[in-house]
Image: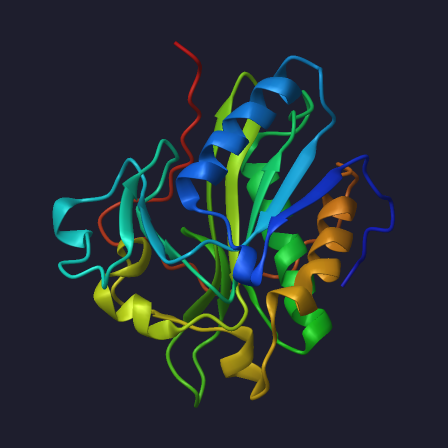
Length: 248
């Protein structure tokens, strides 16, 4: 697999891990603040890296039946990104890249670059992953451990040509939270973590430098060799959509 060595001018800000995990609504306010600065040219492209206390976030395509009947004390927050409902919580590294997209970079290309960076992070740790065409995120192929399963989720918004929201990578998260709802509205696949796949604990602190290195490389907007996809498996009922929202 080809690797990208060039680095971008991204600024990385770790804003809450472990006991300092940042409340989702506080992080959303911070995202909006940084987004406005980047869009105005007053701040460099920035990636916020953090953990959240347990929270379910429902994107614009979330159907009522997909919400957890019993969220286990976690908040359920409606958000302005595309996609459906997902979970964030301790043991999951969340990244919010807030970057202006160059004219030659389409939104789908941006998403694929973030996916590729996370695929490379998993590979560095010894976990083989790829994309599943028709479904965003990073996946493991079905094997004797279980069905096809997602290890990283992606949901974004683009406003004024600048991205927000982003990705989550399951490091050591309690998978019991996923039993309370249908992750991303996809009922025919599973969810996993780096810890579960490797049989040893992998923390968010362990993956943080790898995520920074690979995001810096792939968001430098240079050509790269993409990891071969797994078999296409469109989301039930519709194809993939990435929503681009403009300010009112």
